[in-house]
Each structure stands twice: as structure tokens, then as C-alpha cells.
Image (cartoon, rainbow, N blue to C red; front, side, top):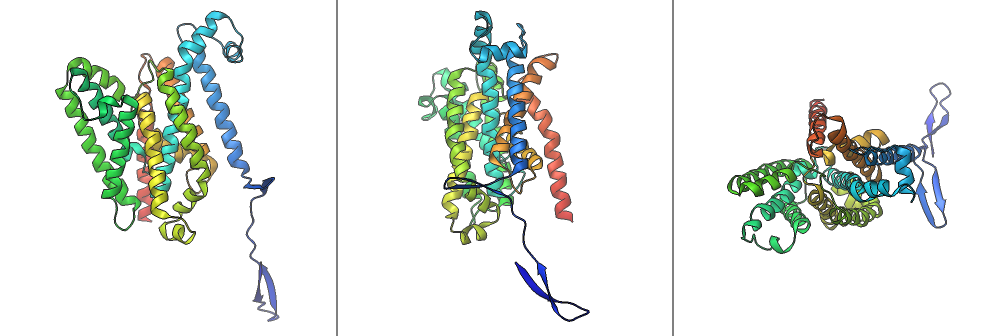
Length: 369
């Protein structure tokens, strides 16, 4: 589009181009997509890094295997002992690291998009703490013969999911005032997180020492003893909810622009906010049930993906791959690099703490300017 503008010397109108450069479109039949070359390249590199970390993790242990040996086993070959070690002993843990990291990252990308705040994530808002409190109640109370409401009949994964959803519902109601504003949501979530952590500590203090030991190992966020019974539900939830989130990508992008803009685009604001928040809580709750509360992955992975892709908001696929790389790499460091094997949650917290301080300082500078 061009607009006429007067020339100062001749007083004649000249044509000034105001055309906005657009991204090339990719058309496949009736489907039309926007081609983002950098996004595709970054996702490809992240996927390759995740697969490489998977192969390295499968080969590290008391019985070491090289990456070619691991690849041979994964394609159906290899010796019988190698297949047993890779497929039966190590694969559930390694796949669990990728699935849990991706689920937490997608949950963080959704909450940060809804609140339009980079500090909003399930572990900061108290959703992970709610899932952890419900799971700890199931561990330390029901084992002594008592029953905590209906949690005893649900099992650990459903108990953690129920705790996360209930916490998110309460936080959403408390933050509601003719809509949900990101800053108020974060403040209320921080308060709820502190109260739920205090409740969890009270249950640990008053419980039997053996139950406390079990719960404490789980609370640090550990993939030790991961089995397919824990990994499979998290993988299924990630596939279903992640696919739905990708389909709703246009809605997520509109919600980043503000409530008024989303309404003007024909989006049912409160309905979509509730559905997306429920999806984020489901992913965070199931990931917490599978590996315990692994801190700072949901906070850091979407923001790292934003910087890698150079997008306006947290991209879903890039965030999921970044989270998978973070958890898989942290688990590899916790198992093999450090002198003593540590839970993966301690490594992610050590790496995520400085990143949280960076986000706080950056946000404070933006407000000051």
C-alpha cells in the first residue's frame, strides 16, 4: 500500500510505500501455514540435541555403552545383555526425563502466555506445590492406616493432578476481578505457594520417619526408579494436551495481546482462559506425579525458547523441546558428572535460581525505564 506525500521542493505528491514485509506461506492442499525458517531450524537443533542426550544417557552407567551401540539396540539389534540394559533398565528413566521436561515446559508456556508475565509458571504460582501437597498427604498419611478424603482411592498420579487442579481453581478465583490480570495472578500464586509449602512441611514433621524419607526423596524431584507405569501416563497426557494446545495456538497468540483485543477477535475469553489453565495444570500435575516437583523448568524453558526463536511469546514446540533438553541434560549431570548422584530437581533448581534473578532484574529495569 502507498500513501501520497507532498514533496517539499516541487509540492507534488510522491508515493511512499508502507508495505509490511510478510513471511512466506507454506500451502499443502487446503492447509496454509506461515513458514518461520528460524523457528524450524531451532526446533530441529533442539530435537537433535534431545535425541543425542537420550543416547548418551542410555549409554552411561556401571555398564557403559557407546552411542553406536545404543543406536544399534534402538533399531532392534545389539546383544541380548545390551538390549536388557538399554530397553528394560535405562530407557524408562531417559524417556521420562524428556517427557517430564516437555510437559513442564508446555505448562509454563501456557501460563506465561495467559498472564503475559515471564515470571508466571506452575512452580511459582503454587500449582506444583498443590500437586506436591496432595501427593505427600497420600504418602505420609494413608500408609499409616488413615484416609485423607478421596485421595486414597485415586493413587499418586491422580492425587497430584487433583491437588494441582484444585490449587489452580482457587488461585484463579482469588485473582478474579472482572478478568485475570497477570501481576495479581503472580502475587496470589506466590502467596498460595508459600502456604502449600508450609502445609507440606507440617505433614512431614508430624508423619512417621519412614514415610517422611519416602516423601522427601519424591519432593526433591527425582527420576530414580522411574517405570513405564509412571512415564506412560505423562507421555499420553503430553501427546493429547500438547496437540490440543498446538491447535489452539491462534487463541493463545490472541490472548497474549490483551483481553480487549482477544474479545474483538471473537474469542470467548473466560472459557478459553479456563480451558488453557486446566490444560497447564493437568500437564504440571501429571509431570509432578511422575518425577516429583522439578523446579524452574516450567519457568526457564519457555523464556529460553523465546530468546532462541526470537518470538513475541513462548512458542509451544520450541518450549517443549527446550524443557526436554534441560531435564535430560540435568539428569545426566546429576547421575554421571557430579561426584555423588543427586536428584535431578536439585540440578534444575541450581541452574534455574540464577535465571529467575535475571528475569526479576530485567523486569525491574523495564519498569524503571
